[in-house]
Image (cartoon, rainbow, N blue to C red):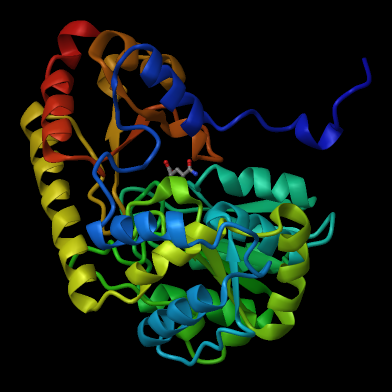
Length: 385
Ligand code: GLN
């Protein structure tokens, strides 16, 4: 048998997706991989039913259907505060997973360095390896997950090609302040680096925190590659609709990479999603209110159980401190949690570059009944583990 490629030897399959499979095996309430168990907005589903008969069912333009890009550019121009040209600045991708990978492959050459904050969403490690980049990890220090400016300066002094910025951050729930973003922006400008953002939780930011788009900071539009998706905003994670917004010199390259990776995102789903992109501000207010309610419900439940946890400023993840259970391996802990307690979680070590084994990540993007059932099970954790 010939050997598989060496570049794939250095990473395992996704631990997040593996935990979903383990949760299914034990019929656990799956709070590992972050996706909702409630329906997308009815308007989008009604439109999907129409599209089933009206089409399109063949390829859209490789960089995205015209009306999808137009609706997206209009929405994001309003939010990001600058004019986005649907014909030049946008590439529609298969989820932000592809957006990030295409962005990395478009600006990074093998051997280039890329700054990644730790903890980080696990895809970035694989993105770096597959594009040949060498990550420089900069810690976000708990409990507030702030970075140390000197540590970030030291990373930039190694002349990275890009920095990856997940804001709001998965798994910490950190929302970067304007001041922090300005510090990152200044270093990116001084050292001539790109900022590749992952902003899929842009609408899930709990007051008083506010989301600031890196691309909206003075002078940053030219070097920022903004990646996001419709998955979390419209509860359609399975539709695989994501996008990149960047200046034309960058989208020209990303379009090529994207074309040869996937040709395009699903045409009928782009068409059906347009109605969502045209929702007014009210939709996003209601979405936030809904997630804020879930956050309170879930965190209050955890407080009643008396287990230490992070306090997310955005997104829908919380990290629990499992030190008291005395496990050496958080992976084993999560396997036991799924099997004996009936709740699926992600081992924290998946996200950290540092040696961290006492945290697990749960998400609360679920119906209230599902969350209550999970809390009921978690309340028996001390008896069962
Ligand atoms: N962002 C989700 C998570 O962190 C998963 C996304 C995915 O599996 N593609 O759980």
